[in-house]
Amino acid sequence: MFDLETDLRARKEAGLYRSRKTLETPQGPEVTVDGKRYLAFCSNDYLGLASHPEVSNSIASATQDYGTGGGASHLVVGHSRAHHQLEEELAEFTGRERVLLFSNGYMANLGVISALLGKEDAVFQDRLNHASLLDAGLLSGARFQRYLHNDVDNLEKRLARTQARRKLIVTDGVFSMDGDLAPMTELVATAEKHNAWLMVDDAHGFGCLGKQGGGVAEHFGLSQRQLPVLVGTLGKAFGTAGAFVAGSEALIETLIQFARTYIYTTSMPPAVAEASRTSLRLLQQENWRREKLTILIQQFRKGCEQLGLELMDSHSPIQPVMVGSAEAAVAMSEQLASMGILVTPIRPPTVPKGTSRLRITFSASHEEHHVQQLLDALDKSTHLLCEKSSRKQSFQEEVS
Ligand SMILES: *Cc1c(COP(=O)(O)O)cnc(C)c1O
Picture 1 (cartoon, rainbow, N blue to C red):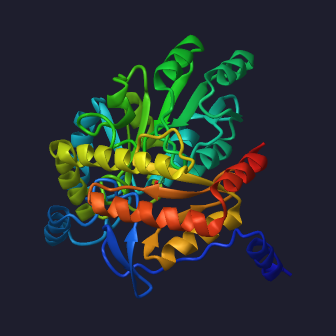
Picture 2 (picture 1 turned 120 degrees about the vertical axis):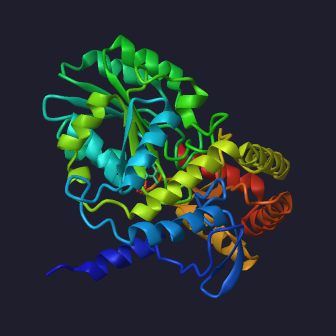
C-alpha cells in the first residue's frame, strides 16, 4: 500500500505544505483571491502585459483566424503561420540565426539538454538553477555536476577535471528565487577556455533587462558564438505562455530532430503565438515599463534599508526578503495577507534549508503608493514577528 497520508502529514508538520489559492481576476496590482481583495506582489507579470488590452485583443482576433487548439504537433500539422512569424521575430529580437518555440519553459529545458547531451557528456549547473534545468540534466544521462552559486572558480576546477566529450555549462540568467544575475562575462571566458558550450535560461531576464528588453544577452552584449544556447519564456514578462530557444541554424535543426519535448507534444494554441507577437512589440517599444520598474525597485530597496530588513543582491524585479525558517516565512506571509497584501513564502525544497524568504516581485503596473503600502505592512509584520535584531540573528544561525 502507498501510505500517502503519512507523507502528507510529515510535510505539514515540517511547515512545507503547499496549497493553491483561487484567483478570480486578471493579473494586476489588485487581485481577488478566494473572494478577498489583495494588493499583490507575487506574479511574474513583470511588465504588466498579462492583462494588457492589446495582447488580449490579439488573442481574441487570432482565435477567429486560427481557431482555438494547435491541433497537432509542429512536425505534423500544428505549425501555423503565427508560430512561424513569432519564431522569425524572436530570432531578429535576440540577434540569433533561428528560434524554436516550445509549449513552456520546463519542456524547452528538458528538450534542449537531453537533445544535446548523452552518457559521454557532462553538464555543469549552478546549484541554484531552476528545477527544470536540474531535472533536464538528470534526464539527459550526462555526468551531472552542480557548482557553487555564481562561483566561476569552483566551476573552473570541475571543468579542468572532466574527460567528457561535450561540456555544457548551464545557468539561470536572473536567478528566479534570488533575483541576482549570473556573472555572464566570466562564464563566457570560462566556456571558451575549456571548450565548453554555455546555455542560459533567461526566463526572468527577457523583457526586464537590456534597453530593448533583450535580457542578459543584450545586457552583457553576448553574441551567438559566446552564448550558443539561449532560452526564454513567454509566461513571465511577455505575459502570455510558452518558451523559445534561440541559436544557430544547426542548433535549431538538432532540436527539431532530437528534442523529444518538442516532437511529441501538441503545439501551443496559435492565438497564443499571435498574442506573444503583440507582447514582443510592446516589450521593445515601451521602454517606460522598464524605467518604471527601476524606480519602484529603488523605492522598495531604500525603504527596506530604513526598516532594517535583509535584502539580497538584486536589481531585478525579484526582491526577496530573507526570513530564515519556513515557519517564520509562512507566518509573515499570513500576517501580510491579514493586512491585504499578497506575498508568497518560498521554502525548501525550492530554496536551501534555512533560507526561506518572502519572494516579492514588482510589475510595471504597480504604482509608488502600492510600494509604500507594502513597506508599511512589512514594517508592522516584522514587529509582530519578533525583534528585528533577534530575527537577523536567528537567520544567521540557520544558514551557518
Ligand atoms: C518559470 C521558469 C521556467 C519554466 O517556464 P514555464 O514556461 O513556466 O514552464 C524555467 N526556468 C526558469 C528560470 C523559470 O523561472
